[in-house]
Length: 172
Image (cartoon, rainbow, N blue to C red; front, side):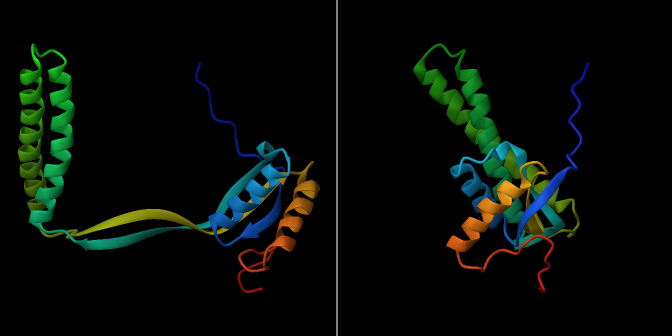
């Protein structure tokens, strides 16, 4: 019998909307500090988009260097596992260093060949992330009023910048 994840709750009310995750997180943290049952809240990101930040060119040399680094880590792992069965500390050290060296060499070769086989496609490195356009703090319908009052108190303590009330849009 496999445990299936529970379906998302639909009886939650938007308490406040924020343009950044940090703002929504700050609101939930304030609720927790106020003794509110935060297990009855959630932060929901809406208007999701994928942002890929280009970090630089990827040359065959950089691909080989990245492969060498990855291979060295793998070689260290293999060397550590083999050194568990080594007779002496000198043998263990030789196994570790050999694992790192062989891993780096094979990693560099595979990194170079792998990049060369792409034929010039995707000659850059990048980092991808999913970003939401809005973060809603929601609460169960039974406690939404209490959560709204607490968040209103937080709003009165802070400047009005950095958040929007429920149902508002960025242009309002």
